[in-house]
Image (cartoon, rainbow, N blue to C red; front, side, top):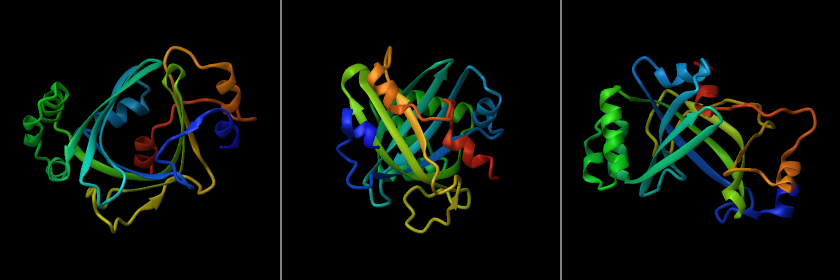
Length: 205
C-alpha cells in the first residue's frame, strides 16, 4: 500500500482500512460459468449483485465478460426491493429499467436458467490514476457462504477462503500500464495470474 499511495490517489471510499464489498454470484443450473472458468475458456462471463453494506438501499447488477486477455464490466443500479426479487429468481423487475443492459440480463438469466449460488465478502482498498483509467485493488479477509443467498442479511455464517494474511491484488487499465505503476505492483517471488473470487469460493464446496 505504501508504494501505491506514493504515486496514486486513494479511492474516495477507502477510509482508514478500505471498505467492505459483498457480492452474490449467479450461475446456470449446470454451473456453466464456473466450469468455463475452471476450464480456462477464452470467452466467459460472471453475473453478480453487489452491495457495500447490508443496509444499502440499492445493489449493482454487474456482468463481467472476459475475451482472452481483455475484459469488460457493465453494471446497472437496481433498487433494494428489486435486488431481493432477483435473488429469489424473479427477474421481472429488470423489465422496468430503461437501460438496454437490463433487458439483456433479463433475457440471459431466463434463457440460461441463472440462479443465485454464493455470497462472497471481503475488505478492499483501492488506488486510482487518471492515466488509462488505472485502478488497483487489494482484497483481503475474503469469506463466503452457500448456506444463504440473502445479499442484505446481517447474520451470514461465512467461512474463510484464503489465509487471513493473503491478499488478492488486481490491476485494471486501458491500453498500457505506465512503468512507474508497473514497478510499484511488482512483488518479489510472485507472478501474475488470473484469480476469480467466485471460483476460489466454489472450490471449497
